[in-house]
Image (tube, rainbow over all chains, first blue to last red; front, side, top):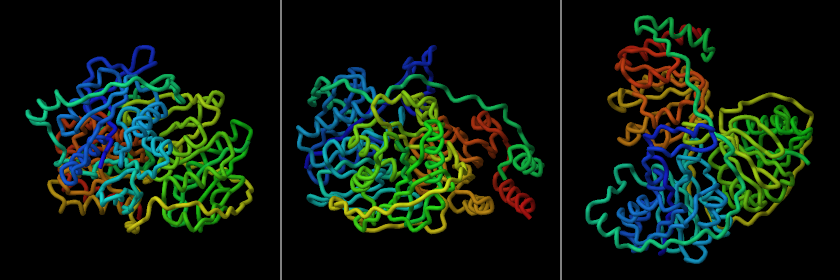
Amino acid sequence: MKILVCISSVPDTTSKINFTADKSAFDKTGIQWVINPLDEFALTKAIKLQESQGATVTVLNVGEAITEPVIRKALAIGANDAVRINTEPKDSYSVAKEIANVAQTGGYDMILCGKESIDYNGGSAPGMVAQLLGQPFVNACVGLEVNGAEATAVREIEGGKETISVKLPAVIAGQKGMVDEKDLIIPNMRGIMSARSKPLQVLEASSSEVKVEGVSYDSVPQRAAVKMVSADNLDELVRLLHEEAKVI
Amino acid sequence: MAIFVYAENINGIYKKAAFEAVSYAKAIADQAGDTVTAITVNPTDSSDLLYKYGATNVIKIKDDGLKNFSAKAYAQAVNEVANGNTLVFPHTTDASSIAPMLAIMKDFSLITNVLEAPESLSPFQVKRRAFSGKGFMHAKADAAGVIVTVSQNAYGVKENAVSGSEEVKELSVANEDTKVVSHEQSSGKLDLKEAEIVVSAGRGMKGPENWGMIEDLAELLGAATACSKPVSDIGWRPHSEHVGQTGKAISPNLYIAVGISGAIQHLAGVNSSKTIVVVNSDAEAPFFKSADYGVVGDAFKIIPELTQKIKALKG
């Protein structure tokens, strides 16, 4: 079985998000980059399938050379090889087109990714890839097993869960719960050393077409100063919530 | 040309997110001097509920093949009946699975997680959530048509009654790639993303056995319960309750955080809440800086007492 895992390189979750002075772009100054946490759940699941079923795992990133440390980390976690499409990702559509191109030529049985990236939160690329490839798409997965030419996926639905069987090849977008947080793989020295010699193929982008443009960005406005209420005076809190905020 | 909106239902019953999406579509239609056509799959609810928010036409897709959800099959079905160049979806799990597939079918732009009515229609430009709630993006669509998904609890539900009519479309879309094995719906449990009040707790609760008081307060307020990341990681509460950067992003009217210190990743997922109350024994907890109201003290004393006082208020 061949699995393609698509990863994004995103600002570390502890990053404060700032924009350039003219608000036209995200300010990357001082940012540490990590594998998108939701993609990491998918990658870990793929490595588990590699161990249990002998799958080969290729990681794919659409990004400029600055993303290579993140790709090497994915290789250190256990992916067999990697592909980087050498272009700045502009929107979900252009990224999905590049992923679909690689998937089409590679003959993968399953494409795994996170359900969205924690930077631009489009949540669009996985579904677009599925449609471009004419494959079924299962989103927001919190469980996945593979049985031959079929996968059994558990997807989160509002107020519950649904277990479905899906014919492969398919695109599966995962999230927290696809594997437990404690099962996420921290690369060891052997993994880090071996990642250096694993193949990382760099390909040029096939097109530059975009459909959505980020025109400008805003930070979250500051709230007014907090009103502290004494723990001995909860009547006052109830009054504030009822009369001032009008939320109860 | 009409504005189309996908009115999501669960087991035939419209979700609040569907009414928000119809309200949003009506705002676009009013800007454009146009009308709203709602599309819904196998509903049992009356179309009157959609006219109330501004849908002039309701297309009811009837298809036994769509009894179970499949993103691909639903996208095909919606594609068959949606003829407009503007389509509105709620940003629910199902709708945001359909929308990207439809965007490719129609060769349209897709802008997800939108928060406000469009800033302009030509070109289509709108404010959307980005960086997991740590920022906003003003996005412009560059294609001939646009699909948007509306972030839940952001635009709100706005009554705007019109007189409408419905049309039934019998379809038979092939749905062979996926098959539902089992479906578990927690009955009576409020959907976290739709809830107007959320009561959330963290490690300060000391153990899962202490969640009763959180649930009592939530029940009294008609609220959903949520938790911080460490709590779901330890397994005290299910992953589906985790709010924050790698969990769910929510925008309730009232968010009550109990025993949560307020890490930047947690704030990312909840800082769109209109009013935030923080209860924490640590006066230095960073969450107080992002709250509207704060109480320093022992949650085990404060929460039951607060519950009693709200009960008294409600009579």
